[in-house]
Image 1: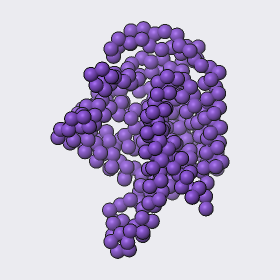
Image 2 (image 1 turned 90 degrees about the vertical axis):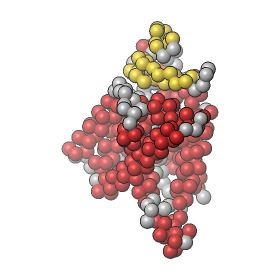
Image 3 (image 1 turned 180 degrees about the horizontal axis):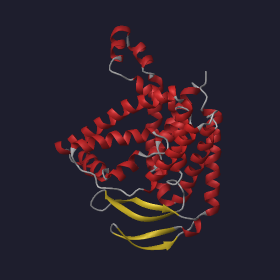
Image 4 (image 1 turned 120 degrees about the horizontal axis):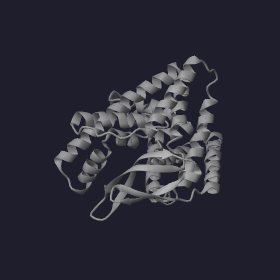
Length: 329
């Protein structure tokens, strides 16, 4: 019973993390100790398992796909997504420095936690750590491009986004922004499909979903295999992804480019596309006119509160490690 309770809590944390742009649910899965089981479970869900249902019954099928794990994790994720929309998203808009500070402390602690699991450091582990950290950092500073809107690229975008979602420290939605496909897929088609059904948007959403499915089934196998065959190099690479992502969650920013997402005739949402990390004393906020930044003004850096939230995030990871990462009997 305790195991299921903790699994729901971990799912909630993953769901709430997905609401925050730049934070991956894979990061939360990794630091809460369910990452490998999640990969193996996804890898194990194959059409061939339907034969087990036919030949041995529903109970055997449910056990073969690790059904309880999937069920309680999804319950937690769905709950976390709903809570995140009504809590974290609003708090992030009101107190971004404090929210980012919390995630900075959480991920910083996870870097130390994961690094301790690598019992033997060699040239390969160090090289992978440096490379993955550099790659992850580059993603946080890269400027977005404008991707083609052909269906083949929609499929590739889904494939890449879901693969990023499975990597700790890499945000799938942020990669869609870099590919120039966030507005086209999320706003122009997903939203259009929900508000005004049309076959054109349905086709785009289906192709994107197929790309996500292909990426999920294939990349989970790759990661599961590398964990099994090359545990320490894989851990070093994933630690690097987390380390490089710290730039994305650094609390103090200077925004250089934004995108305004229209949610209706009046409502709109401002999405930050390009920003750079600055020292607390240089933290500022922007004044916009439409989708253009026209001026900057000094902003409260919440230095004491930010340091406290970093500590809270750091200590929360310790609590997750202490009470949540070990399976209960």
